[in-house]
Length: 461
Image (tube, rainbow, N blue to C red; front, side):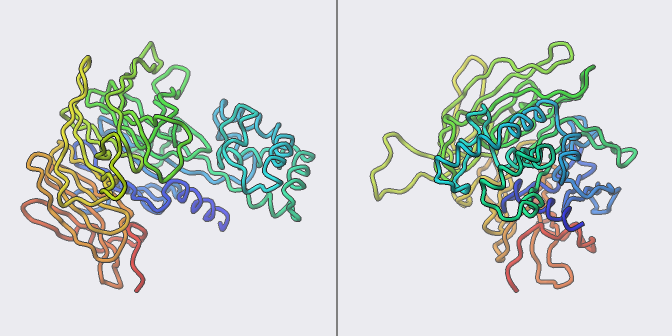
Protein backbone atom coordinates (compact mmCIF):
# COMPACT_ATOMS: atom_id res chain seq x y z
CA UNK A 1 0.00 0.00 0.00
CA UNK A 2 2.87 2.33 0.72
CA UNK A 3 4.30 1.86 -2.78
CA UNK A 4 0.89 2.43 -4.35
CA UNK A 5 0.44 5.71 -2.49
CA UNK A 6 3.90 6.87 -3.56
CA UNK A 7 3.11 6.05 -7.17
CA UNK A 8 -0.14 7.99 -6.95
CA UNK A 9 1.62 11.04 -5.52
CA UNK A 10 4.21 10.92 -8.31
CA UNK A 11 1.50 10.55 -10.93
CA UNK A 12 -0.38 13.59 -9.67
CA UNK A 13 2.83 15.59 -9.35
CA UNK A 14 3.65 14.84 -12.97
CA UNK A 15 0.21 16.00 -14.05
CA UNK A 16 -0.40 18.99 -11.85
CA UNK A 17 2.76 20.50 -10.48
CA UNK A 18 0.72 22.79 -8.24
CA UNK A 19 -1.60 23.96 -11.03
CA UNK A 20 -5.38 24.38 -11.07
CA UNK A 21 -7.34 21.27 -12.13
CA UNK A 22 -10.87 20.55 -13.36
CA UNK A 23 -12.44 18.51 -10.55
CA UNK A 24 -16.14 19.15 -11.20
CA UNK A 25 -17.62 18.94 -14.71
CA UNK A 26 -21.34 19.16 -15.46
CA UNK A 27 -23.13 17.07 -18.08
CA UNK A 28 -24.26 18.92 -21.23
CA UNK A 29 -27.84 19.13 -19.94
CA UNK A 30 -26.68 20.27 -16.48
CA UNK A 31 -28.48 17.47 -14.65
CA UNK A 32 -25.40 15.69 -13.26
CA UNK A 33 -21.92 16.65 -12.15
CA UNK A 34 -18.88 14.37 -12.30
CA UNK A 35 -16.70 15.01 -9.26
CA UNK A 36 -13.05 13.89 -9.11
CA UNK A 37 -10.85 14.20 -6.05
CA UNK A 38 -8.03 12.23 -4.45
CA UNK A 39 -8.37 9.53 -7.11
CA UNK A 40 -12.11 9.06 -6.50
CA UNK A 41 -15.03 9.64 -8.89
CA UNK A 42 -18.67 10.33 -8.04
CA UNK A 43 -21.81 11.76 -9.62
CA UNK A 44 -23.61 14.60 -7.85
CA UNK A 45 -26.91 16.37 -8.39
CA UNK A 46 -27.44 20.16 -8.55
CA UNK A 47 -28.82 20.02 -5.00
CA UNK A 48 -25.39 18.71 -3.82
CA UNK A 49 -26.64 15.19 -3.09
CA UNK A 50 -24.56 12.24 -4.23
CA UNK A 51 -26.04 10.06 -6.95
CA UNK A 52 -23.43 7.30 -7.10
CA UNK A 53 -19.76 6.65 -6.43
CA UNK A 54 -17.23 4.54 -8.31
CA UNK A 55 -15.16 2.00 -6.34
CA UNK A 56 -11.92 3.05 -8.09
CA UNK A 57 -9.07 4.92 -6.39
CA UNK A 58 -6.98 5.93 -9.38
CA UNK A 59 -9.05 8.54 -11.26
CA UNK A 60 -7.18 11.62 -12.49
CA UNK A 61 -9.88 13.55 -14.36
CA UNK A 62 -13.16 13.12 -16.20
CA UNK A 63 -15.09 14.68 -19.09
CA UNK A 64 -18.59 14.11 -20.40
CA UNK A 65 -19.25 12.65 -23.82
CA UNK A 66 -20.97 15.02 -26.23
CA UNK A 67 -24.37 13.35 -25.72
CA UNK A 68 -23.98 13.19 -21.93
CA UNK A 69 -24.53 9.43 -21.83
CA UNK A 70 -21.02 8.43 -20.75
CA UNK A 71 -17.92 9.69 -18.99
CA UNK A 72 -14.47 9.83 -20.53
CA UNK A 73 -12.07 9.18 -17.66
CA UNK A 74 -8.30 9.36 -17.21
CA UNK A 75 -6.90 6.82 -14.75
CA UNK A 76 -3.37 6.31 -13.43
CA UNK A 77 -1.89 2.88 -12.74
CA UNK A 78 1.39 2.78 -10.76
CA UNK A 79 3.37 -0.33 -11.72
CA UNK A 80 6.46 -1.87 -10.14
CA UNK A 81 7.51 -4.62 -12.58
CA UNK A 82 7.90 -5.02 -16.33
CA UNK A 83 5.36 -7.87 -16.22
CA UNK A 84 2.74 -5.47 -14.81
CA UNK A 85 3.73 -2.72 -17.23
CA UNK A 86 3.89 -4.60 -20.52
CA UNK A 87 0.26 -5.79 -20.36
CA UNK A 88 -0.90 -2.16 -20.13
CA UNK A 89 1.18 -0.75 -23.00
CA UNK A 90 0.12 -0.20 -26.57
CA UNK A 91 2.09 -2.21 -29.13
CA UNK A 92 3.86 0.89 -30.46
CA UNK A 93 4.92 2.17 -27.05
CA UNK A 94 6.04 -1.28 -25.92
CA UNK A 95 8.30 -1.56 -28.96
CA UNK A 96 9.65 1.93 -28.34
CA UNK A 97 10.49 1.16 -24.70
CA UNK A 98 12.03 -2.23 -25.53
CA UNK A 99 14.16 -0.65 -28.28
CA UNK A 100 15.34 2.02 -25.88
CA UNK A 101 16.00 -0.54 -23.15
CA UNK A 102 18.02 -2.82 -25.41
CA UNK A 103 20.32 0.03 -26.38
CA UNK A 104 20.36 1.74 -23.01
CA UNK A 105 23.52 0.23 -21.44
CA UNK A 106 25.72 1.04 -24.44
CA UNK A 107 24.04 4.39 -25.03
CA UNK A 108 24.50 5.37 -21.39
CA UNK A 109 28.17 4.54 -21.60
CA UNK A 110 28.62 6.79 -24.64
CA UNK A 111 26.53 9.72 -23.44
CA UNK A 112 28.04 9.83 -19.95
CA UNK A 113 31.38 10.55 -21.53
CA UNK A 114 29.96 13.79 -22.97
CA UNK A 115 28.84 15.00 -19.52
CA UNK A 116 31.93 13.94 -17.58
CA UNK A 117 30.08 11.03 -15.97
CA UNK A 118 27.44 13.29 -14.36
CA UNK A 119 24.11 11.47 -14.85
CA UNK A 120 22.14 14.49 -13.58
CA UNK A 121 23.11 16.35 -16.76
CA UNK A 122 21.38 13.87 -19.05
CA UNK A 123 18.49 15.58 -20.83
CA UNK A 124 16.09 14.92 -23.69
CA UNK A 125 19.01 14.63 -26.12
CA UNK A 126 19.95 11.38 -24.36
CA UNK A 127 17.85 9.21 -26.66
CA UNK A 128 18.51 10.87 -30.02
CA UNK A 129 21.06 8.29 -31.19
CA UNK A 130 18.22 5.75 -30.95
CA UNK A 131 15.77 8.05 -32.71
CA UNK A 132 13.87 8.58 -29.45
CA UNK A 133 12.88 11.87 -27.86
CA UNK A 134 13.46 10.71 -24.35
CA UNK A 135 11.72 12.04 -21.28
CA UNK A 136 11.84 10.94 -17.65
CA UNK A 137 8.79 8.68 -18.08
CA UNK A 138 10.18 6.75 -21.04
CA UNK A 139 13.55 6.49 -19.31
CA UNK A 140 12.01 5.03 -16.15
CA UNK A 141 10.03 2.50 -18.20
CA UNK A 142 13.16 1.50 -20.16
CA UNK A 143 15.11 1.11 -16.92
CA UNK A 144 12.34 -1.13 -15.61
CA UNK A 145 12.59 -3.25 -18.76
CA UNK A 146 16.36 -3.63 -18.41
CA UNK A 147 16.15 -4.39 -14.68
CA UNK A 148 13.64 -7.22 -15.18
CA UNK A 149 14.66 -8.54 -18.62
CA UNK A 150 18.41 -7.95 -19.00
CA UNK A 151 20.54 -8.88 -15.97
CA UNK A 152 23.87 -8.07 -17.61
CA UNK A 153 22.55 -4.76 -18.96
CA UNK A 154 21.29 -3.80 -15.52
CA UNK A 155 24.68 -4.53 -14.00
CA UNK A 156 26.33 -2.26 -16.58
CA UNK A 157 23.88 0.57 -15.90
CA UNK A 158 24.26 0.46 -12.13
CA UNK A 159 28.04 0.40 -12.50
CA UNK A 160 28.06 3.40 -14.83
CA UNK A 161 25.75 5.36 -12.54
CA UNK A 162 28.09 4.59 -9.64
CA UNK A 163 25.22 3.29 -7.55
CA UNK A 164 26.56 1.17 -4.69
CA UNK A 165 23.20 -0.51 -4.17
CA UNK A 166 21.56 -1.85 -7.38
CA UNK A 167 18.62 -3.19 -5.37
CA UNK A 168 17.90 0.27 -3.98
CA UNK A 169 18.16 1.83 -7.45
CA UNK A 170 15.85 -0.79 -8.92
CA UNK A 171 13.22 -0.41 -6.22
CA UNK A 172 13.24 3.39 -6.64
CA UNK A 173 11.93 3.17 -10.22
CA UNK A 174 8.42 4.61 -10.36
CA UNK A 175 6.45 4.10 -13.55
CA UNK A 176 2.82 5.06 -14.04
CA UNK A 177 0.57 4.04 -16.92
CA UNK A 178 -2.02 6.66 -17.81
CA UNK A 179 -5.19 5.33 -19.37
CA UNK A 180 -8.08 7.04 -21.17
CA UNK A 181 -11.34 5.18 -21.47
CA UNK A 182 -15.08 5.22 -21.02
CA UNK A 183 -16.66 4.74 -17.61
CA UNK A 184 -20.06 3.15 -17.71
CA UNK A 185 -22.79 5.06 -15.89
CA UNK A 186 -24.89 1.93 -15.48
CA UNK A 187 -23.73 -0.40 -14.11
CA UNK A 188 -21.25 1.53 -12.03
CA UNK A 189 -17.70 0.26 -12.42
CA UNK A 190 -17.79 -0.77 -16.07
CA UNK A 191 -14.60 0.27 -17.88
CA UNK A 192 -13.56 0.33 -21.54
CA UNK A 193 -9.93 1.48 -22.09
CA UNK A 194 -9.08 3.35 -25.32
CA UNK A 195 -5.59 4.81 -24.95
CA UNK A 196 -2.59 4.00 -22.73
CA UNK A 197 0.83 5.54 -22.23
CA UNK A 198 3.59 6.01 -19.66
CA UNK A 199 3.67 9.69 -20.61
CA UNK A 200 1.25 11.81 -18.52
CA UNK A 201 -2.08 12.81 -20.06
CA UNK A 202 -2.59 16.52 -19.44
CA UNK A 203 -6.10 17.02 -20.82
CA UNK A 204 -9.04 15.26 -22.48
CA UNK A 205 -11.79 16.95 -24.51
CA UNK A 206 -14.74 14.94 -25.81
CA UNK A 207 -16.03 15.81 -29.28
CA UNK A 208 -19.48 17.45 -28.94
CA UNK A 209 -20.99 15.48 -31.84
CA UNK A 210 -18.86 12.41 -32.55
CA UNK A 211 -17.39 9.50 -30.56
CA UNK A 212 -13.88 10.97 -30.60
CA UNK A 213 -11.76 12.29 -27.74
CA UNK A 214 -8.91 14.79 -27.98
CA UNK A 215 -6.08 13.62 -25.73
CA UNK A 216 -3.33 16.08 -24.83
CA UNK A 217 -0.10 14.44 -23.76
CA UNK A 218 2.55 17.07 -23.21
CA UNK A 219 3.40 18.29 -26.69
CA UNK A 220 1.49 15.48 -28.41
CA UNK A 221 -2.17 15.84 -29.38
CA UNK A 222 -4.15 12.74 -30.34
CA UNK A 223 -7.64 12.05 -31.68
CA UNK A 224 -8.79 8.82 -30.05
CA UNK A 225 -11.86 6.80 -31.01
CA UNK A 226 -13.30 3.43 -29.99
CA UNK A 227 -15.73 3.29 -32.93
CA UNK A 228 -13.66 0.91 -35.06
CA UNK A 229 -14.12 -2.69 -36.06
CA UNK A 230 -10.48 -3.36 -35.11
CA UNK A 231 -10.83 -1.68 -31.72
CA UNK A 232 -9.70 1.70 -30.32
CA UNK A 233 -7.27 3.79 -32.32
CA UNK A 234 -5.25 6.98 -31.81
CA UNK A 235 -4.37 9.39 -34.61
CA UNK A 236 -1.59 11.93 -34.04
CA UNK A 237 -2.87 15.45 -34.73
CA UNK A 238 0.12 17.55 -33.64
CA UNK A 239 3.56 16.95 -32.11
CA UNK A 240 4.15 20.57 -31.08
CA UNK A 241 1.12 21.15 -28.85
CA UNK A 242 1.47 24.05 -26.44
CA UNK A 243 -1.32 24.26 -23.85
CA UNK A 244 -4.71 22.55 -24.05
CA UNK A 245 -7.01 22.10 -27.08
CA UNK A 246 -10.75 22.35 -27.75
CA UNK A 247 -13.23 21.21 -30.39
CA UNK A 248 -15.15 23.46 -32.74
CA UNK A 249 -18.92 23.50 -32.00
CA UNK A 250 -19.66 21.28 -35.02
CA UNK A 251 -17.01 18.76 -33.95
CA UNK A 252 -15.16 18.94 -37.24
CA UNK A 253 -11.99 20.71 -36.11
CA UNK A 254 -9.54 20.57 -33.24
CA UNK A 255 -8.36 24.05 -32.25
CA UNK A 256 -5.05 24.45 -30.40
CA UNK A 257 -1.75 26.32 -30.25
CA UNK A 258 1.25 24.71 -31.92
CA UNK A 259 4.65 25.90 -30.71
CA UNK A 260 6.56 27.77 -33.40
CA UNK A 261 9.83 26.07 -32.40
CA UNK A 262 10.80 22.87 -30.64
CA UNK A 263 12.74 22.69 -27.43
CA UNK A 264 12.04 26.22 -26.17
CA UNK A 265 13.13 26.81 -22.59
CA UNK A 266 10.48 26.66 -19.88
CA UNK A 267 9.28 29.83 -18.15
CA UNK A 268 10.05 31.95 -21.20
CA UNK A 269 7.78 33.78 -23.61
CA UNK A 270 7.06 31.43 -26.50
CA UNK A 271 5.64 31.97 -29.96
CA UNK A 272 2.89 29.70 -31.24
CA UNK A 273 0.34 29.38 -34.03
CA UNK A 274 -3.34 29.25 -33.14
CA UNK A 275 -4.58 26.71 -35.64
CA UNK A 276 -7.36 24.27 -36.48
CA UNK A 277 -7.03 20.74 -37.86
CA UNK A 278 -9.92 19.07 -39.64
CA UNK A 279 -10.82 15.67 -38.18
CA UNK A 280 -13.03 13.37 -40.23
CA UNK A 281 -13.82 9.69 -40.91
CA UNK A 282 -12.69 7.43 -43.69
CA UNK A 283 -14.64 4.25 -43.12
CA UNK A 284 -14.15 3.47 -39.43
CA UNK A 285 -10.85 5.35 -39.15
CA UNK A 286 -10.30 8.87 -37.87
CA UNK A 287 -8.22 10.92 -40.29
CA UNK A 288 -6.66 14.36 -39.96
CA UNK A 289 -7.29 16.68 -42.88
CA UNK A 290 -6.10 20.20 -43.58
CA UNK A 291 -4.54 22.30 -40.85
CA UNK A 292 -5.13 26.05 -41.01
CA UNK A 293 -2.97 28.45 -39.00
CA UNK A 294 -5.05 31.47 -37.97
CA UNK A 295 -2.55 33.69 -36.19
CA UNK A 296 0.88 33.80 -34.56
CA UNK A 297 0.81 34.78 -30.89
CA UNK A 298 3.19 35.20 -27.96
CA UNK A 299 2.42 33.24 -24.82
CA UNK A 300 3.78 33.63 -21.29
CA UNK A 301 2.38 30.20 -20.31
CA UNK A 302 0.80 27.16 -22.03
CA UNK A 303 -2.58 28.60 -23.05
CA UNK A 304 -5.98 27.11 -22.31
CA UNK A 305 -7.95 27.33 -25.56
CA UNK A 306 -11.76 27.45 -25.49
CA UNK A 307 -14.09 27.67 -28.49
CA UNK A 308 -17.39 29.45 -27.81
CA UNK A 309 -20.73 28.23 -29.21
CA UNK A 310 -20.51 31.12 -31.69
CA UNK A 311 -17.33 29.58 -33.13
CA UNK A 312 -15.10 32.34 -31.77
CA UNK A 313 -11.97 31.23 -29.92
CA UNK A 314 -11.07 32.68 -26.52
CA UNK A 315 -7.29 32.74 -26.25
CA UNK A 316 -5.01 34.42 -23.68
CA UNK A 317 -1.98 35.87 -25.43
CA UNK A 318 0.44 38.73 -24.89
CA UNK A 319 -0.05 42.28 -26.10
CA UNK A 320 3.22 43.14 -27.78
CA UNK A 321 4.62 45.05 -30.72
CA UNK A 322 7.59 44.43 -32.94
CA UNK A 323 10.22 45.64 -32.57
CA UNK A 324 9.96 45.07 -28.83
CA UNK A 325 9.75 48.06 -26.45
CA UNK A 326 12.93 49.67 -25.23
CA UNK A 327 14.42 48.70 -21.88
CA UNK A 328 12.64 50.31 -18.96
CA UNK A 329 9.20 50.31 -20.57
CA UNK A 330 6.31 48.11 -19.48
CA UNK A 331 6.62 44.43 -20.18
CA UNK A 332 3.94 42.79 -22.37
CA UNK A 333 0.94 41.62 -20.36
CA UNK A 334 -1.43 38.69 -21.00
CA UNK A 335 -4.78 39.67 -22.49
CA UNK A 336 -7.80 37.79 -23.78
CA UNK A 337 -8.65 37.91 -27.45
CA UNK A 338 -11.69 36.61 -29.27
CA UNK A 339 -10.64 35.15 -32.59
CA UNK A 340 -13.31 34.77 -35.23
CA UNK A 341 -12.45 32.02 -37.68
CA UNK A 342 -14.03 31.69 -41.10
CA UNK A 343 -12.69 29.28 -43.73
CA UNK A 344 -10.98 31.11 -46.56
CA UNK A 345 -10.51 34.37 -44.69
CA UNK A 346 -8.10 35.92 -42.22
CA UNK A 347 -8.77 35.59 -38.52
CA UNK A 348 -10.68 38.51 -37.00
CA UNK A 349 -9.20 39.65 -33.66
CA UNK A 350 -11.11 41.40 -30.93
CA UNK A 351 -9.28 42.42 -27.74
CA UNK A 352 -11.29 42.21 -24.52
CA UNK A 353 -11.02 44.83 -21.80
CA UNK A 354 -8.58 43.62 -19.15
CA UNK A 355 -9.36 46.03 -16.29
CA UNK A 356 -10.01 44.14 -13.06
CA UNK A 357 -8.70 40.81 -14.33
CA UNK A 358 -5.75 39.01 -12.72
CA UNK A 359 -2.32 39.14 -14.31
CA UNK A 360 -2.36 35.37 -14.78
CA UNK A 361 -5.09 34.45 -17.28
CA UNK A 362 -4.21 30.78 -17.73
CA UNK A 363 -6.92 29.38 -15.42
CA UNK A 364 -10.47 30.04 -16.61
CA UNK A 365 -13.69 28.26 -17.53
CA UNK A 366 -16.35 29.35 -19.99
CA UNK A 367 -20.09 29.00 -19.33
CA UNK A 368 -21.99 26.57 -21.60
CA UNK A 369 -23.61 29.32 -23.67
CA UNK A 370 -20.40 31.32 -23.95
CA UNK A 371 -21.74 34.34 -22.06
CA UNK A 372 -19.47 34.41 -19.02
CA UNK A 373 -15.94 33.38 -18.01
CA UNK A 374 -14.86 32.44 -14.49
CA UNK A 375 -11.25 33.30 -13.68
CA UNK A 376 -9.01 32.12 -10.87
CA UNK A 377 -5.27 31.96 -10.31
CA UNK A 378 -3.05 29.41 -8.64
CA UNK A 379 -1.39 32.04 -6.45
CA UNK A 380 -4.58 33.02 -4.59
CA UNK A 381 -8.13 31.84 -3.99
CA UNK A 382 -9.92 34.84 -5.51
CA UNK A 383 -12.58 34.09 -8.14
CA UNK A 384 -13.89 36.60 -10.66
CA UNK A 385 -16.62 36.43 -13.30
CA UNK A 386 -16.16 38.19 -16.63
CA UNK A 387 -19.19 38.99 -18.79
CA UNK A 388 -18.16 38.68 -22.44
CA UNK A 389 -21.02 40.89 -23.62
CA UNK A 390 -20.66 43.84 -21.24
CA UNK A 391 -16.95 43.12 -20.47
CA UNK A 392 -17.78 43.70 -16.81
CA UNK A 393 -15.76 42.00 -14.08
CA UNK A 394 -17.40 40.89 -10.80
CA UNK A 395 -15.25 39.65 -7.94
CA UNK A 396 -17.39 36.86 -6.52
CA UNK A 397 -14.85 35.69 -3.93
CA UNK A 398 -11.97 37.74 -2.45
CA UNK A 399 -8.49 36.62 -1.52
CA UNK A 400 -8.35 34.91 1.87
CA UNK A 401 -4.79 33.59 1.90
CA UNK A 402 -5.36 30.15 0.36
CA UNK A 403 -4.14 29.06 -3.08
CA UNK A 404 -6.63 27.74 -5.60
CA UNK A 405 -6.14 24.23 -6.98
CA UNK A 406 -9.63 23.74 -8.46
CA UNK A 407 -11.07 25.29 -11.59
CA UNK A 408 -14.53 26.88 -11.20
CA UNK A 409 -17.29 24.85 -12.89
CA UNK A 410 -20.29 26.24 -14.78
CA UNK A 411 -23.60 24.36 -14.85
CA UNK A 412 -25.44 27.04 -16.85
CA UNK A 413 -24.62 30.56 -18.01
CA UNK A 414 -26.02 31.79 -14.68
CA UNK A 415 -24.77 29.21 -12.18
CA UNK A 416 -21.16 28.74 -11.10
CA UNK A 417 -19.55 26.40 -8.56
CA UNK A 418 -16.14 26.94 -6.98
CA UNK A 419 -14.09 25.83 -3.97
CA UNK A 420 -13.16 28.18 -1.12
CA UNK A 421 -11.32 28.07 2.20
CA UNK A 422 -13.28 28.66 5.40
CA UNK A 423 -12.33 29.37 9.01
CA UNK A 424 -14.25 26.33 10.25
CA UNK A 425 -11.92 23.68 11.77
CA UNK A 426 -14.44 20.93 11.06
CA UNK A 427 -14.91 21.98 7.42
CA UNK A 428 -11.92 24.04 6.19
CA UNK A 429 -12.93 23.75 2.51
CA UNK A 430 -16.32 24.09 0.89
CA UNK A 431 -17.89 24.24 -2.54
CA UNK A 432 -19.85 27.44 -3.15
CA UNK A 433 -22.60 28.26 -5.63
CA UNK A 434 -22.88 31.66 -7.34
CA UNK A 435 -25.71 33.14 -9.38
CA UNK A 436 -26.07 36.73 -10.64
CA UNK A 437 -29.32 37.17 -8.72
CA UNK A 438 -28.56 35.33 -5.49
CA UNK A 439 -24.83 35.88 -5.09
CA UNK A 440 -22.77 33.27 -3.23
CA UNK A 441 -24.12 30.50 -1.02
CA UNK A 442 -22.73 27.28 0.47
CA UNK A 443 -23.34 24.27 -1.76
CA UNK A 444 -21.44 21.33 -0.18
CA UNK A 445 -22.78 21.27 3.38
CA UNK A 446 -21.80 18.18 5.36
CA UNK A 447 -19.88 16.52 2.55
CA UNK A 448 -17.39 13.77 3.49
CA UNK A 449 -13.89 15.20 3.82
CA UNK A 450 -12.50 12.93 1.06
CA UNK A 451 -14.36 15.04 -1.51
CA UNK A 452 -13.02 18.35 -0.17
CA UNK A 453 -9.40 17.74 0.84
CA UNK A 454 -6.86 19.24 -1.54
CA UNK A 455 -9.28 21.47 -3.48
CA UNK A 456 -7.20 24.38 -2.23
CA UNK A 457 -3.81 24.76 -0.63
CA UNK A 458 -4.67 26.15 2.79
CA UNK A 459 -2.54 28.81 4.52
CA UNK A 460 -0.56 27.85 7.60
CA UNK A 461 -2.71 28.19 10.73
